[in-house]
Length: 177
Image (cartoon, rainbow, N blue to C red; front, side):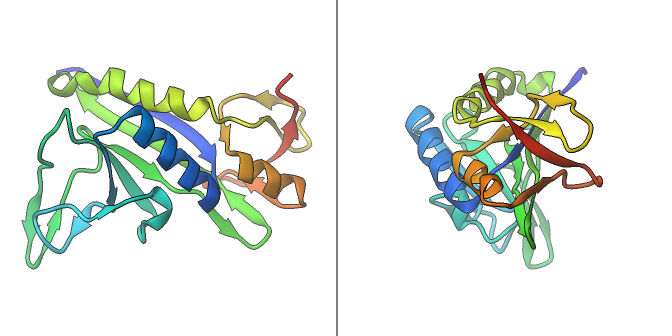
C-alpha cells in the first residue's frame, strides 16, 4: 500500500491562527479543530479556533469525510489519530524575541486517498494568506516554502525574528513582488 505525505511549514501568531480558523471554517464548513491527539474520553476534545487549543498540536478534522475519529484506549485516556484521517498542525510558538516555525503535515495511505485533495485544498487556503517570502539570514537564499501570516509579518517587522523550529536557521523578509 503506497504511503504519501504532505508537509507545509509556516510562521503564524495566535492572531494568525484565529484568521486561519475563520478562513478554513468558511471554506470547509465541516472542519473541526481537535485539541491534541490524547483525550479524556473516546470523543475528541474540540476547540472553536486553532488559537484556543491548549496543545502544541491541533488536528484539522474533515468531519464530513470521516464521521468518527478512530481512537485507542490507554487506561483512563484515549489516543486519537495524529495523521491519516486528520492533518496535524504543529503550532508556531514564540520564544523570547523569536517565532519558531510550525507546520501542517499529513501522511496517508491509499485507503484514505481522499485526504490528498482535502489536504491540498487546506494548504492552498493557507497560501492565500501568505504575507511575504523569506530568505535565510546571511545566506541570501530566498524561499517561498514558508507561509507567513499577516500578524507574523508584523511581528518580524517590529524586530522579532523567525527561526526554524528544529535547526539554527533564521529568516528575513523578502517582498512578495
